[in-house]
Structure formats: structure tokens, C-alpha cells
Length: 295
Image (tube, rainbow, N blue to C red; front, side, top):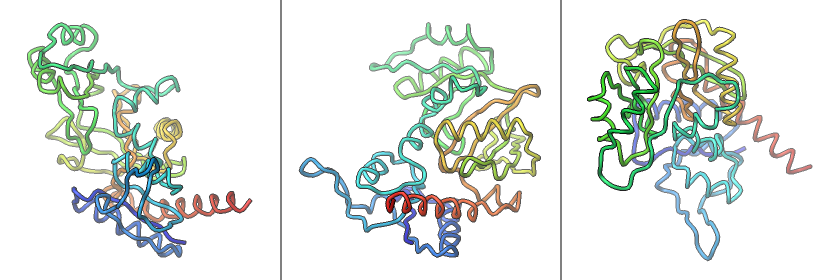
């Protein structure tokens, strides 16, 4: 069996390198030779009305990037991707994530999408409408972003208007703040099952991300947290997901869902070999696909 791991060619850090190398080693233990490919090195496009991709045959591709166009073209050429391009696209846009999860009995913070603007102006009236619906502090999130980047907090109308002015020409949203911030639970879900969890705390920032100074701690996953995380991954059709859960002390809420969540931190905290579990799931899915094609 052969596979590929595709990562972004323009951004790389220690967590990304660890992710792909650890996963490659675990796949090799299961007999799968896996190439590592940077997305900008792939020769592909649309020519003569058809998608072409100069990529050798693979039984599977682990897509550790968010360039949905490349993922979609690979799928159109018949490649099997984990995760699928549609799921990656939904998770990459935070507002699309909330919309997709809605109607499935999954608690989420009260959220309002910023209207698309085509000219440079500040809509104070819209800001006041948000204030009439949400209490301060109000979370302002860019629709696209990871590792806590693009997540901001407004403590008053002046700060809210300033953030609105900053992001008015970009997709973003406004959301109630659950709890006091700086704390959440990260759950890794693989193949529909929660396999590991940790609590993340940041004493100096309302964002709990480890990349922003947060720290991971062991956490006994509650039955409700487990159910929420697994339901979210199922609705979004994710084979691999990092689900973030926040609480106000009385109720749990889905905060975000990441299709390419890093596992270095949670592996070190929990001792769970997430890469091994993920590799086993990828191989099982590939074998199932082969059997379907034979049948």
C-alpha cells in the first residue's frame, strides 16, 4: 500500500514537521510507504476542460493543509483523501462550521455573521445591533484562521467599532463569550470515536491555544463532552478532528472544530499515540475502499 501526506509549502513549524513525520512512521509500521509532498510542488490544473494532476497513483492521501482547491482537484482525479475536501472547507470557515452544526442539537455560542461589505465604511448601526444582542465582552473572529490568530475580544462599544472597522472587508463573525476565557477542552476524534482529550489553560490570554502560551493538562472526558465532540465530527463528516469545547460551568458548548488539529501537545500530555490510531484508521479505510472497488 502506498500513500502521500500533503502539507503547505509556504508555512512550516515544528508541530507540522512532527505531525507529518510521526504519521509517516506509523503508516510505515503498518506497511504503507508514504511520500511527503508540499502542495505548491504539485503540477495540476484544468486543461482542455479537464482536471489534470501529475501525481503518481496512491491508495490514500492524508491532506494536512487547507487549500481546498487542490484537495478538490485531487478528488476529481479519483484520489482518496483523509479528510475530504468538503469537510476541510467547512472547518476552515468558522461561520460555515457553525451553520453546518446548527439544527443537530449541538450547543454553540450565540453567533452573528458580519455582512459582506464592498466599500470602505464603518457600519456603527450594525455594531449597535450586535450590542443589543450580545453582552460584553464580545468575541470577534475572523472566519479564517488557526492557532488563535484572528480571534479578538471587545470589552465596550468603542473597541467593537474599532474591530469592525479593522475587519469590515473580511469575512468575520461576532460571538458571545462563554465563561471567563483562557480555558477549554480539546478532544481528538478519529473514525467517529473520541480517543484523547486534554484541558488547555492560559493564565495570560483569553485564548487557550498552546501556540499563544496556553498549557495542556490531563483531563477526564465527561460523557457529555464525548458525545458533543463525536456528534460534531460526525455532522462534519470528519475522519480526524480536533474539537474544542468551552463551558460556563453549567453547560458545554462547541467552540471550534479543526480538521487538521496538531497532536504533538495532546500526545505528550495524555500518552495516547494518536498518530498510531490515525494511521490504523487510514489503512482500514483504504482497505475498505479497495474491497468496494473489487466488488
